[in-house]
Image 1 (cartoon, rainbow, N blue to C red):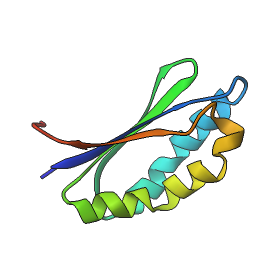
Image 2: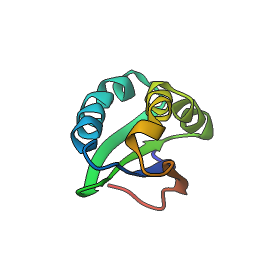
Image 3: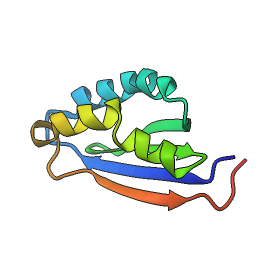
Length: 97
């Protein structure tokens, strides 16, 4: 059961939107390799705001994801891609379908 989640958003520098969108579209493959990641979504809110929402059954899975390939790749290029650091919030799932 999905009990825990992460909600991460980033503000992308002008001209880097396509690069971030492509990265997120391809990052799903790395998420599929994570056994503890139950669901993983990437999304776009507006022209410069992108995000990731994912769910986990336990804290170990969530922590593994925070220290995994996707997070490392995002942080490696953060200063080049984002106007500020990613906003990452740990959330508790109240209900789901």
